[in-house]
Image 1: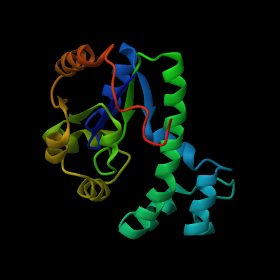
Image 2: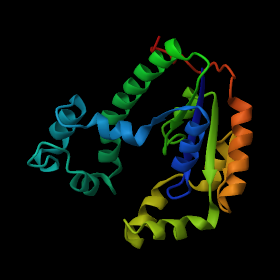
Image 3: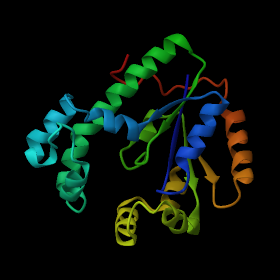
Image 4: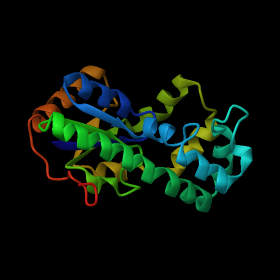
Length: 209
């Protein structure tokens, strides 16, 4: 099994690249989806979040009030670190469960670990190869097309992330997604040719055997 870590700044297309790799035959572990599952109603993660942040982050239906939680942690590094300390172990546990199953069922699989904070959390150490999807100056224009976040919030979120130049420097492979999709597709095909059928050494992770 070969573990491919995919990251990139917000709006640069890492999810689209990951989905294309799935179409080519890879498995996908999306850390954003797993993070939502980690704090689903009735979960241990949600119980611990409520215990630390208080009842104000729980809605009447028992689900997490993501907006309120975001307000509490957005510009508070200590609280954000505490939240990550609750959620990240849950994500790694769910990832390990899937990887254990896939190792038994499809040992030659390529698994994409889509992780926005790949380098920030040290998750690159759990991958055989890392990829940064970059889009340079196109980032703000693409975020504007989404329309789900005001300009000031976008800039605050971007400011808290590792700069794209640093993500590119740290990655084993950089996919330039600043132009036409056809050019990106060619890079994805080249990447797939590099990893498909290749056996990695990252799995099993220490303590996950």
